Image 1 (cartoon, rainbow, N blue to C red):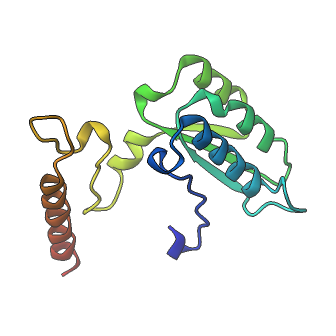
Image 2: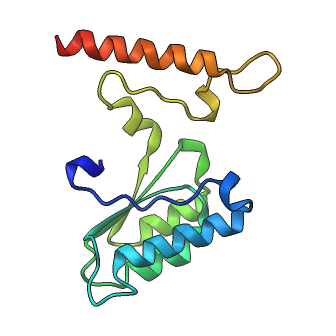
Image 3: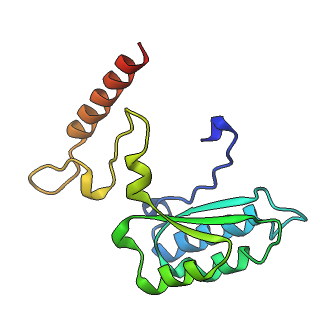
Length: 148
């Protein structure tokens, strides 16, 4: 995405920040920064928040107050968004909820979905690194075959 001209504002993983609350604050601050809360103008006219957590609703509503922001997309898995959050997003004129599952289904050949439920696991429940590497290698091979 960055190579295509998009500015990515990523939050640190929970392993780095050590707490969920700190990660939420990082994400909200990134939203405010992109929407121009700390500068005279926003960095973007569209924001995509990849999180189904209703805790972001106040931040979403705050950034939508900027008239320069044309649209905000909340992208989340089908089961990750509560009815209350879904209804609140629908009530915002310039916000929309997009299905992460639907977006992943439309991705180019070679994209590997390694979200938690689809990530290969060993019998003890730990992520199977070899299985992940096999999936990535198969995707790379398929992509190379498609390109030729």
